[in-house]
Amino acid sequence: MTSTTDPAGHSPAEAPDYPMPRAEGCPFDPPPALRDLQEQARVTRVKLWDGSTPWLVTRHADQRAVLTDPRVSANMTHPTYPRQAAGPGGTLSFIGMDDPEHARLRRMVGPVFMVKRVEEMRPMVQRIVDEAIDDLLAGPNPADLVEAFALPVPSLVICKLLDVPYGDHDFFQANSKTMINRNSTPDERMAASGRLAEYLGRLVAEKLEKPGDDLLSRLGEKIKAGELTIRQATEMAVLLLIAGHETTANMIALSTALLLRNPDQLALLRDSDDPKLAHSAVEEMLRYLNITHGGRRRVALEDMEVAGCPVKAGEGLVLPNDIANRDPEVFTEPDRLDITRSARHHVAFGFGVHQCLGQPLARLELEIVYRSLYRRVPNLALATDFEKVPFKHDGFVYGVYELPVTW
Amino acid sequence: MKVFVDEDKCCGAGSCVLSALEVFDQRDEDGVVVLLDAEPAEHLHAAVHEAVQVCPAAAITVA
Image 1 (cartoon, rainbow over the protein chains, first blue to last red):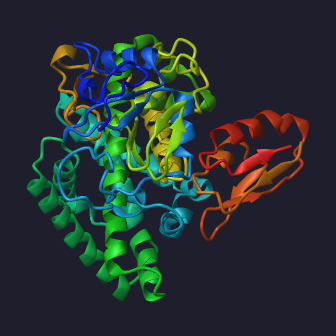
Image 2: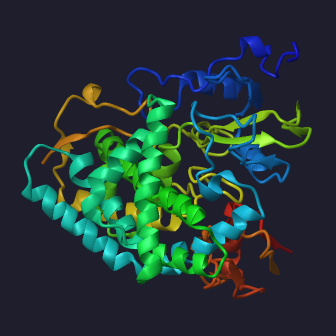
């Protein structure tokens, strides 16, 4: 360890802890201490839970440069990879691998998430959203929007895609909740991941026997062709199941909470027939609310420079997308929610070859929700004090634990 | 404007298709970029520039 200070003037010993707490009463905004760092320097040292002091990259342009640099690795089993929590350093399939193996595995499932294939799913997703709204309206009032709407919609969609029985949703939602909670112990996380792997491994094996027209059967074909092991297929299935419902569910609930706090923007969205507005609203929500608030993580494989700062081989890099998406060098008045702005170049889905595979599906689901929910439930309102809404400060995925609403 | 794509770099995120449907598509087998129009008309230039900007893998270039 060296005693030299970073560009913000911190020695490694003085590096601020990361992640940082959000300001009281501002649950939609990045932590103030993180904003201060962004103002102070393009690259700073931070201290993680295990005492390691990786580099934190604060600017949008620099984060994009790092995430497209072949000298950095996404390998989660690398000994100095800046991990979010203690526990088994599993790879969780291709998101924790580098090319060429990453590209080989990712391309096996790529066609399912192609823009045109996802667009073919529009009627199915619209039906799921419509029925979820019917159920919400027919159920008790007030209701928890997370339980009654935000979680069922993406869970049903990913279940259809993978052909996983939706009847098992209590099981896989509970286990994925344990896996993505920072407060779970390593043992709890490992046990939950083991249960999900066992469950999906069994479904993959069934698909090998009786293939259908779904993603697990597609993975079965790759196993038969000798391109994939059952273990790899299972890891991929776990990744897709978790990523497919947790992220979008949190975006739906969190963006609804945000819109209820910004009634002018909500009215704009609700009263417009312009499909372009729904599209720009999706991008602005993704920019403004960064549910992957632990940042992207990488490790340098060679000595390199990041924004003029020397980074040594083996050092970790943390790239918080929340602060990049509020970078005033890139977005005018970044803290203003404006669903009419063009925010497509946000990094909510990451950047580089690991950019979210499921983004066309996430965009489709959010767009249909935004065009349907507020129109059909125009008097939607919070059923509790905003201060009492429980935000997921302790989750790997940010959101709300529940959102009591009435109409 | 002349558009070039590098299939080896492409990660199949589909951002280019969302930007300029007339210029880009994705290959059925693996979702990798397909260039539909290497010399797009002027009214598509802004959309192509957006596709270059949002491509996460820097697989699209223009000259």
